[in-house]
Length: 78
Image 1 (spheres, rainbow, N blue to C red):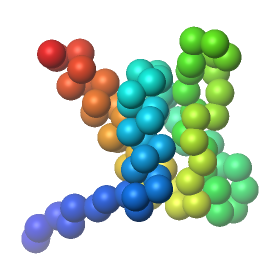
Image 2: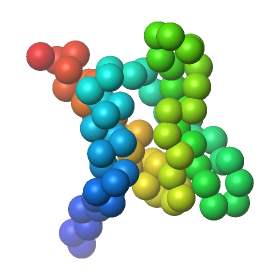
Image 3: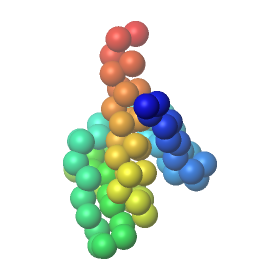
């Protein structure tokens, strides 16, 4: 069986691209804000540990973390 490729909605993809461009450090921790909202936790130089982004869907939040973490790994290899 083929695994289906999933993409973030364009507005959420823009958030992810901005976080990647800013070289934020993302923990792999998702925090539930309420029953419908998930936050990506991370660190920025100025403020330290913060919520970097919020998503209405846990799957989208997980995909965002994967994309950000993947870009960090790729950056470290280049």
